[in-house]
Each structure stands twice: as structure tokens, then as C-alpha cells.
Amino acid sequence: MMTETGKEKCAHTSLRNEVDQLHLTANHLKNLVYSMSVVLSERMEHTQEYEALLTLFDTVRNHIENVQGSSVNISELLEPCALEVSKTK
Image (cartoon, rainbow, N blue to C red; front, side, top):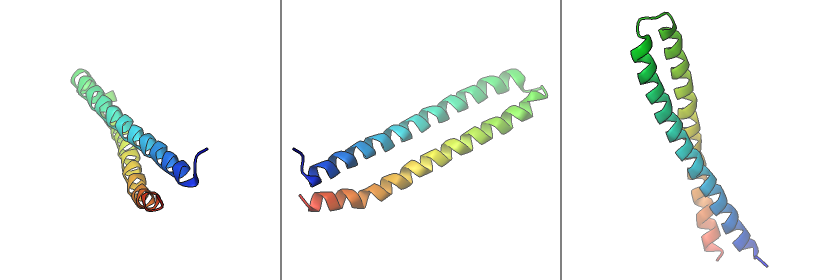
């Protein structure tokens, strides 16, 4: 049976892995949005839809940056918890 400290370490590690995965996914989305914007801007540079697409990409990019910021904040909040769990060992 797992001790309380063991459960806390397991939960912390699981949460850390989820945050790392969130950060990785946000990076992949950022790269995908950039690639899409390059391709579409080359094909639609002189169309009316171009400005709408730029607005859409800026909005998506802002949301991705917000997700990345949140994952960094969560990571920073997890650090004291990791230290506390390791002290109770």
C-alpha cells in the first residue's frame, strides 16, 4: 500500500507530466498555425479573405500563448510542492 508521501509524489509527477504535455502540444499548435499562415498568405495575399485570416491566426496564436503561459505558471506553482514532498521523505 502506498504511503501518503508516495501518493503525493505520484500525483505531483502525474501533474508535472500533464503540464509538460500541455506545453508540448501548445508548441506543436504554434508551429502548425505558423506553417498554415505562411502557406495561406502566399496563396491569398491579394484577396479580401487575407485580412480575416490574419485576424484569425492572431487570435489563435494569442490563445496558444495564453495556454503556454498557464502551463509555465502551473509549473512554477508545482515547484514548492515538489520540495515539500521531498522534505517529508
